[in-house]
Length: 176
Image 1 (cartoon, rainbow, N blue to C red):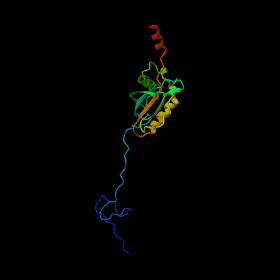
Image 2 (spheres, helix red, strand yellow; image 1 turned 90 degrees about the vertical axis):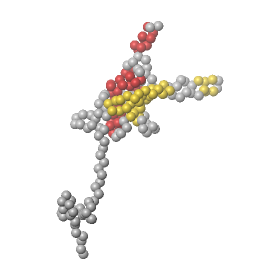
Image 3 (tube, rainbow, N blue to C red; image 1 turned 45 degrees about the horizontal axis):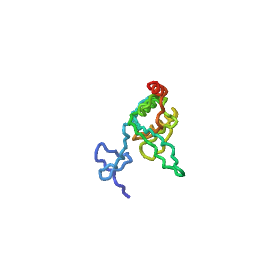
Image 4 (cartoon, rainbow, N blue to C red; image 1 turned 180 degrees about the vertical axis):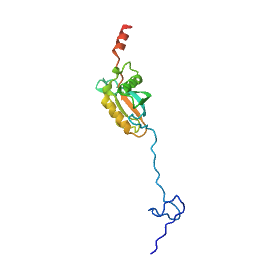
């Protein structure tokens, strides 16, 4: 039996002790290495600086059902007032997030926000489930989930309308 001789065609190609066999002067095809986009700047000791687009939906509940005689008149749908977009950085804390939401909801103070009804979800897919962001623990869970997400950092924050601040209520009564 005779084996086919190994052919060396160029000085840069593997030599005779290599386990790569060159047939017809061609090298075996190389695998393409997929490079990740440099969207996340990962430095030592620092948090990534990723910008998140935040859209705010202020959801006003419908009025109570109206009863006329034995019939109930159809209840109106929830009124959604879209606000935004706002840009939020992962390096910011919960207080900065609340102040951004306060400005977007046009509330006078972060204490006016109804945090118990605040929820967030990804913009895509549209049927993604809402998750609570009612306190700092929910905020940290949101950031952790967003850091695992590889693209499209756009979220929707839904909340009930803010309540009036006591200073606003007192100024309304004193000006009349």
